[in-house]
Image 1 (cartoon, rainbow, N blue to C red):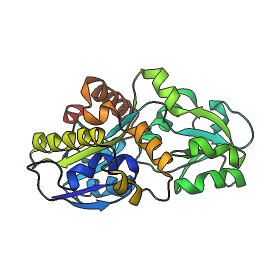
Image 2 (image 1 turned 30 degrees about the horizontal axis):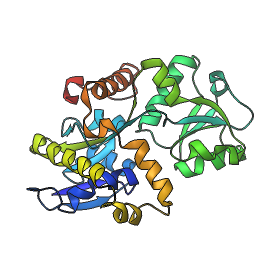
Image 3 (image 1 turned 60 degrees about the horizontal axis):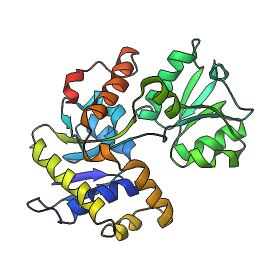
Length: 276
């Protein structure tokens, strides 16, 4: 069976036991390591492996062909994207009519940004420009764009570029809804046995928690020059109770995010019932 997920520590930690034959009565897995932006489009184009990690924001494009699994993914708190600018600590109206760089147009970060703009920037931004996430802060610093939407480790490094916070979208989302942020989802083709696959993945998560040392070499092999401490922090941030089981709270967070995005016309119309 074929599976695709990122080389990030949270994914390699979660799937180590499954793809190394440590979960009984499972098939042999062939792994493709791919960034989530790549898997988002594979799924939308009916390409790629039978099982994939994609952004929750991509689900409206793929639910006719893939089913959301209730485990293996990532929802979190305190890990949201930031809106930054160069001049000063900002306010929402600072992006009115401005050029804002974003790392993707099919990501949770993008959905949160668009929902925040719809609620707090009534006259809208001037232009949304997509660029690789590692190029966004330098572009804001150089004045090539007015503001930037940043993710990942940029939460901690943006002061090095002389940038200032306009909004922490994760903090805004949690205050506005009370829900965690839906980040990465695990999907499987609809013609597969989903309950069995979910059982395997949940067993892999539980194995990882019970034997954290077992996956250490595998995690660090793919950790893209992270130190062990940074890799461990990454795991602790993104592998949590929702990874083992979305539960009612997890599903509700997803439904609120995608329901709002559908109502704003940010994603195509889809049947919310297909999320469960």
